[in-house]
Image 1 (cartoon, helix red, strand yellow):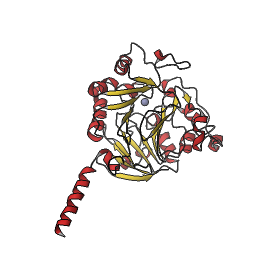
Image 2 (cartoon, rainbow, N blue to C red):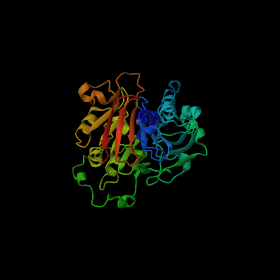
Image 3 (spheres, protein in one colour):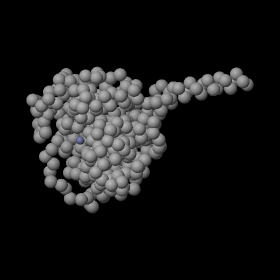
Amino acid sequence: MVSRLRVSLLLAALVLTGTRGGLAQSAEGPGRRGLEIDFIDVMGGAATLVITPAGESVLIDSGWPGLKDRDPKRIVHVLKDLAGRDHLDHLVTTHWHTDHYGGVDGLNRLIRIDHFWDRGLPEDNTPGLDFPDGPKANDPLGIAYRKASRGKRKALAAGDVLPLQGVEALVLASGGRVIDPARRAGTALASAGNPLCASAPPDQPVDPSDNARSLAILFTLGRFQFFDAGDLTWNVEKQLVCPVDLIGKVDPYQVTHHGMDISNHPTLIQTIEPVVAIMNNGPRKGGAPATVARLRAVGSIQAAYQLHRNAATTTAENTDEALIANKDKAGGAIIRVFVEPDGSSFTVQVGEDGPKRKFASR
Ligand SMILES: [Zn+2]
């Protein structure tokens, strides 16, 4: 009996060792990995790392430039130390603003990047696409991006999918255009029309910036869905749900545009009915009280996380204290999502060692 007990304890110890940290938290052995999504704090920029069931790494946006490579270093820490990857398979840039592709140069110096995906560059000469905010040929960031991605980049149009295993990553918007409804007809969407559109607020003036041209990507694993729309703004957001819903129900919603209120169209949020919202705001960027209130008004949202407390607004205008990853200006704490291999549920963790909470997928 004693030796049998000893064997059991040894086995238990081995299992515990094997399941510590990273992807393994949602795994039940080789070939049974789930999805991992890390919301890396880049102080009001964007850097969302997705690790697929096959172990592929996909970074959506790369934070700010400079600052002694603060953001590339934060990304590499999560990629190597937490996710256990030694290179980046895919870097996706949602649009040409500094807080979304500024980290490319530093990242490219620190790790190997195999594939670059973006909404297009002016020199691609894609009919109908415009580039109001660059990247210009003489802009240092544009030069760095072109150099790092030479021979390794492709543009994504609405309807394209990223070449990943075990998870679908579908581009719903790119360059100001949304996916053809015919592409979504088979998903029980886009057939009857969205009744919420009748009460949609009016459009805003046309957004001439690159925000309106952001990539919007939907990740699907079983019934689990994660939506990241970069900094997409109001009128194009509305086209994703009106007159027909092209998205479907969403589990974690990356609150668009750092939580600014010129994004996060109420009809979109009401239509996708997220289970949780995760906002990549900075201490003084995004996190608009109107957006916080808009998220609170959606009954499906069980928890609205923020990377930072908004230092410019009141406690009541921020989310609950326990759902904020960074309460001081230094920042750096991340928010992690671990999705079960079958997509049936997911766990959200605030910080690397913080409390976890489990949610059922829609
Ligand atoms: Zn941004």
